[in-house]
Length: 434
Image (cartoon, rainbow, N blue to C red; front, side):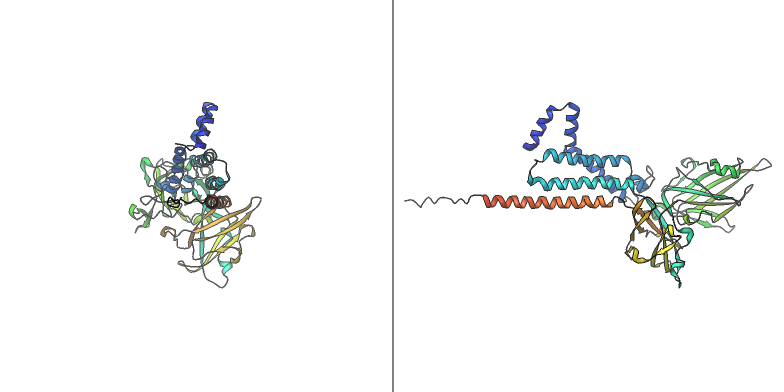
């Protein structure tokens, strides 16, 4: 049975039109709050906790990134509805009295957390910076960072194919629809027609067809005695994909078919390893002799984006990291002193605030990806993410804690006041009168 206050509120609802009455009661129902709460908390937890060795966003039905899963619009709508339901339920169920002030403040803080956290996912920018490691020399700041690397980082959502034919400029082609965490070949492989890219078609002509034929989420290229390379997929039980935003050891096969002058065709299959550290230069490092085209450079990389800073590292070896620097992209690679940012070494990373032109100050978090798949020979991988909504999340947490403390304090003061004002009655002694 509802408490007397809420019972009166329900009776007053009878004066409202039917749709408004149903909506009002639904938004103040414990069942509605429970369903929305289980969905929001369960969905976010599933995106952060692996089940059976894989996250929910790595399952074949999703096959996307954690950021994409957390920015799904139904999750944002559910979080906002839950915040509204919690506020509306508190306003209807709790009498407007001083002793309920703490509960109202706590509910307000909870609503602020839900709204700000869900919006933080939407406004967050995520990428991976591949930090070049240089040997320790006398001039560490000059060697730690190259000017070509100053403002590039790899996007976690989009991957591209870089094609360079002869002496032409490299052409970047998006690979939309390409699998990410699951192997694909044959009918399961989307036939991306690379040659349909207008810029590339103008270079190779319409007598050449380039399509994707196979994708291996985790594997190794084995060098054969004849100089060719063959892929060797990693067994599913040994794949380490838990801490990376994309598979670092992915392999992509391209099928290149050229029409020859004698009327025949020539087919070449080129296997490309994923290059998460390759965003500092758009020029491919792998070249293939293609009949009718000559030397063709190919690279399979994350899409390159810009940041207002870059990362550099100095180390004695690839396993002993001693110093990490920051460089301002607007100062042509000028390295900032370590005192200008907080480096919590040997922790997971550090935070940094950078001012972009006309965009104000943005807070960045750099987390070292410690997975074995991220231990590249000459690079360290750092997950770079923005946190522009963090102050609102912190404000919600503080408001919630203050509400809980205030509620306990008011409850204690109310109990103490009742004990003081209660009359001191003593039982009568029946044997006193004789």
